[in-house]
Picture 1 (cartoon, rainbow, N blue to C red):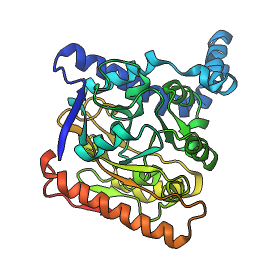
Picture 2 (tube, rainbow, N blue to C red):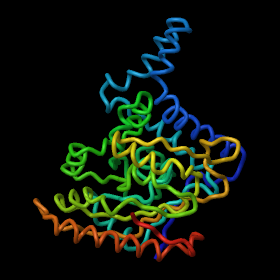
Picture 3 (cartoon, rainbow, N blue to C red):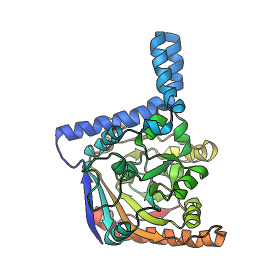
Picture 4 (cartoon, rainbow, N blue to C red):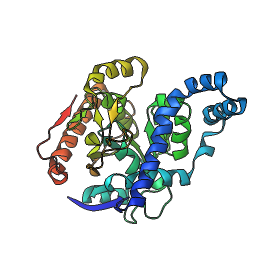
Length: 337
């Protein structure tokens, strides 16, 4: 039963909405547009603009690749990013079941929170995840939730190779590349962290108004959880699939791109007058509704992984079915590919 919830950005006033829009545009405008296009912008700058503009752009592109990663962490930046919740209808709300809360009260580390679905721009993962702790803001996390600034998260490795976007991610202080080395480093340190198991493939199969998860071929996170005996908490982002409208014709192209090169080219639109902003008629609720304690198996077999993977999917479906009506999705089926 969901008896605990906490919302950020719920104030429905012009200032809060405007601040949220600015945060969205700064974070994703710089990261998703300027970052990937920065090599082309640099070339144009060399050809047509004064040298000092070219130099400034070059510094902006290369800075995060040459300085120590930990030095880029900024709680102030995290707080600014959380302002995005002010644009979303009703803010961003985190819900917990009694079961999960009681477990988190007893377990202070070795917890992996798995978020579904990814969405096109993962808002639930960002606004209702580790960033709340990293912001070091008293009202970002309720007093009853035993999480703090030590929590972390993982993202697709390709994102850390994109100029400017790399800086944005590392400034969160809670982003690790989802590589084998990164996962082992977090788990050896018994770090509590968040992950989106569906990854870029789940972004590729997004269909507005439907719940599509890419999970049948995603077993790596299960193997890691078994190797380190992690507690796995299942989280579902209700509303994530509806915040943006995707272009279905790109689905097959993006699946090919992610399998071949590790990235996608999502074509999407949110608010009618600004595609980068989410729709204003969709609420975002992240439910941490189920916790599974994995046994520690140093060398899990394929049978071990398949058994626990099947159990995970079963519990994920049960969580979705138990709470979908509460958030207005009673008639929507969960599709796992």
